[in-house]
Image (cartoon, helix red, strand yellow):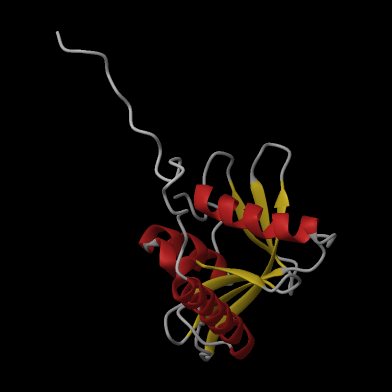
Length: 168
């Protein structure tokens, strides 16, 4: 066994040591980088360019729909233009559709907006299928989530959707 363990003092703790300092040019460069990133983010938001900007496309089909919770836990989907039943979704099914609606209605309730204005389900010429809340300007691009979700929403887009509609 050797002698006692000796620990060195922390850097800068010795009276003869210089205090640690970050070079001023490094601080200026870091501040400049942060400023450039903020300017790019703000300009992308204002001028609408960037990775998240969706290009405008021709509308191929559109349907305005209202969604109402049923007492049994299902969802009643009504065409807002004709007041015809578009679909009756059984309880425990359509998890993605329920999640998308929950996200959009949460935005409405936090903004103090009611459920009177229908949602828009739009099929664009570029292939996108989008559920849009016109009151909050929020949307869910359904085509980003796979073929099962596309089929579920596609059935709602058709005027004569069956009552056994989507069940993913």
